[in-house]
Length: 192
Image (cartoon, rainbow, N blue to C red):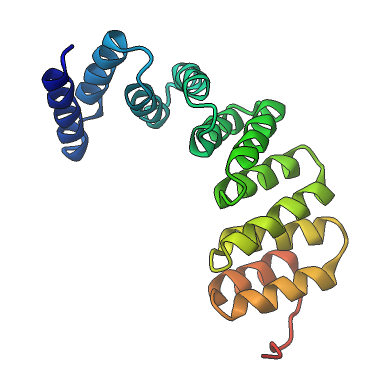
């Protein structure tokens, strides 16, 4: 596949995706990977599309290949970890998230993913550390805060969960209210 053909196939695949037609796009990405098996763009594109289509084993194979091709890409390691987590391969997912953080320490999604995996593994103290890092990197996202409050409740630390809920009230009052309902914690007015 020459350069012009390669670019044309990229455009065609994107057009199919814009039109909501994932199967024809997958056919194009399959041809691109067959033509250039070491091309990170082709492998990543197909991996993402396979994951969206629920073809997890094929997606995992492509993401494993992608991290071989781009070992210094935090995003590649994150995506690999995400699909491993979905496959309930938690120890491998944890390793992938750790690798993502090693190469991209400010990748907030990897810290969040690590936190979720650590929760699933019952390693709550480590989960707190990962989620706290996520909330420092992404302070206005409610997801890390929500999980952090839940872990504090699970660790029998309601006072820490209350602090998180009060903090959330400042920018995500619906999430704060949801946490109050779910945890049964009665949180007074925030102090500021």
